[in-house]
Length: 146
View 1 (spheres, rainbow, N blue to C red):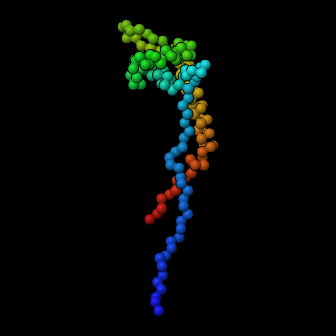
View 2: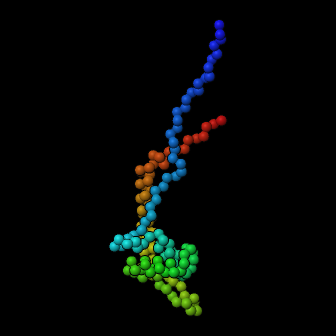
């Protein structure tokens, strides 16, 4: 009579782990303000105003942002035209070398945009957790032990 050999043992099946989304989930928006349907204030123009405030010079601000003086000047003139306010006060060269400073309205616009952006960012972070939290907050599975 032939001998019966046992077949290969079946390993217990592991339940497949649900896929875990990789990384940290974060809602993001690009914000700008339109006036009469035309882009007036946005992150690029606000970075230009911040750089002018820091360097006290349009040409130094343009260099810092990696753009030509002509393009920076064009953005500045477009901003002033659209908002209807002078935002930068230029000073011609001379013994002190000239430069540019923000007007009180320019400073106020920069501050208002920063507050607006912070408030919207806070709302977006809350909404992201509310709508995507079940995926974004899932703990990562620990690696199997050897």
